[in-house]
Length: 331
Image 1 (cartoon, rainbow, N blue to C red):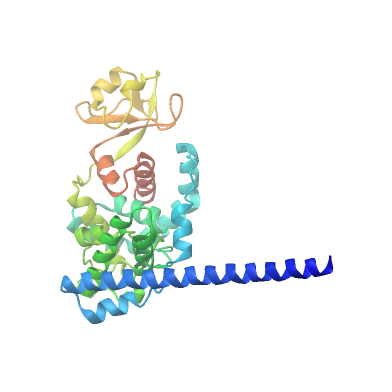
Image 2 (image 1 turned 90 degrees about the horizontal axis):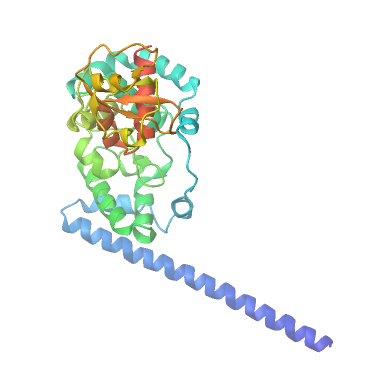
């Protein structure tokens, strides 16, 4: 019996050592495979004419897939918030208080920049507030490391490889140093949370230094957000929407941002301003959205609401931006 126990212990030890050896070998193979992947990225970047020195500096920031990035990518929460829950989470009174203080300090910079790029301060403040808490939280991940990880081992590898190549192009242009290019685990960058492709299309120089620095230059952040919305069709000095009162329940088929009518037609259906009074104009086109269904908070939304959705295609997000920006700038 004793000999058998010793034999089992020895076999267990050998099996455990073998398992460790296999695990170590797998890890080493994975690192080697990742190294080959990075070499393919390097070759592609050099073939596109990017600087060898910049590419080397950037890719040196990632040596193996980032486990934290992969965990976040694969374990995203599946629960769905109601509008009321989302509103309470992203629009606490403290965010309005902070926003008003920040706006008072930044208005002299923001207003001329917003106007120059075809937008206005309400939308810029709303997006800046939701995306990064007015610049307080712009991400902690190396964008190159995050994008390379997801391009190598992500759910949408082709998409992230394309974003990685665009990130290398941005670095090649000299707007930011590789180590300073930080963002979210999914590669959304800086205070505006632009993906590299959006950066190349919309990032703008607001402070006149010849660079587009959405990480540490507030003027560039404002210019970039304003340029994004301006190029997507923002109508200056026009409202995004407003809360309304429904004097009777609307048919579900009448609700939704694409179901547009004139305000005169909506008034005939029992829609009023939130205080119960009639709209001041009757020929303006709008749509009623009521995210949580009959008997809950309702809004009349206009053209600019859909422009905000170009930044993030969510009714909740667009309502949050509109309410936050209006609550700060128009207070």
